[in-house]
Length: 436
Image (tube, rainbow, N blue to C red; front, side, top):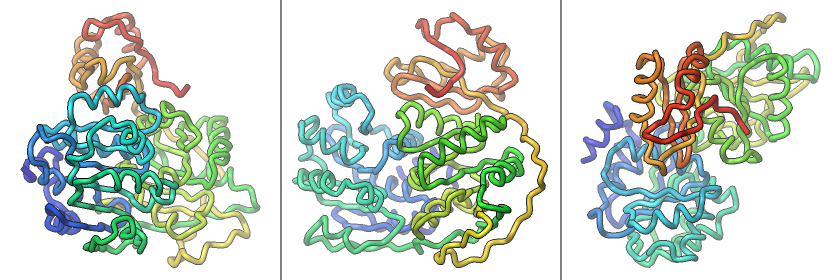
C-alpha cells in the first residue's frame, strides 16, 4: 500500500531521510527522527505508521500529537491525499468540543491533536485509549517549548497498550527519552540545524534606525514573488501591516493573538495566491507547509540560532531555491550565530507597487459538516458562471466554511451571477473572504 499512497500524493521518489525512516519504524520500535525543517518529516512518519494499522475496526490505534492546530489540519490533509481509507479524527483548541465528541461515536483508527485538547478528551474519556499501540509526537521540541510537558506526560501515562513510539524534531535534546523510562530510542539524525545550500543570504541596511521604508522598498522589489516577513512580536506585525496597507501593498498577517478564523483565512489566502506577502511572528517558522516561498525576510533579527534555522527553513525547501534577507538598521550588528557573511544588496529609492495578485478568495458558508466537497463547489461555479477550469484555483474546505480562489478579474461578475443561487439545494452566503 505504501507505493499507492506515494502515487496518490503525486510523489515520484522519497528522499534519503524518508526511505531510512520507512525502514526504521516497525512494530514495537522507539525512534527519534531529527531532521531540518522542510525536509519532509510528515511523510516520513506517516508512510510507516499506516503500515502498522491492523484493520479498520480495532478502535483508535495511532495517536499523533502536534503542537499547533494548523499542523494538526496539515497532517490530516496529507492523510486525505494519501487516500488510506482509514477514519481519522482531528482535535485542537478553538475547534468545537461537542463536534469532536460526536466524531468519536464512530471509532477512528487515527487521532491527530494538540496536547491540551487531547489531554482534555482523555480526562473526559471521549475515546478508549487502551487500543492505541502507536504514539507519534511531531515537533516534540516545539510542544515542550510551548509548555505542554504536563499534558504530554498525562497522555503517555494513559496509553496502557503502547508499543511503538516515534518522536520527531528539528533539534536534538537529551530530555526526549526521559518521557519514556526504560525505552531505548534509535536516533535518526539528519544534519539538523544546517541551512540549505540552495538558500542565498542577502542584507539591506537603512540610513538610520527606521527600517520600515527600507522594508517597503524591499517587498516592492520582489515584484509579486512570495515572501514571509518575520518579526519578534505581534505588535510589530500589526504596526508593519498598517504601513503596508496605507501604501497599498496587499498582504496578510499571522500571529498567536489572532482569532482562529482569521489565522486560518490568512494562511488560506497566502497558500492560494490571494496575497504574496505574509507578516508573521515565529509562530509560522515551524510546522506549516507553505510551498513555493521565494523569500524569507528577517525584519527583526531572531534572538537564537534555532529561530534563525527554523525561519530559513520556510524557503529553499525540498531542492527549491530561496533567499533569506536581513533588514538592518544603520548600526545594527549581525548575531554571532549567523556564520555566513550576507551579500549586501542596494535598493532603488523609488518603489513601484507590484501588480495585484492573480487570485482572489470567495467565502462559502458551508463546509465538511454540510457535506460540501471540492467537486460540488467547482461544478457549481462552472455550471452557473462563465468560468473555465483554469479560472478556479485552490479550494479549501473547513468544518463549516469553504474558500475558493478564482481569477481576480472575474470576481465581481461571478459573485453577481451566483448571488442567491442554491448550492446542493442549500441557500448559502457567498461573498469575498475578508478577515473579521
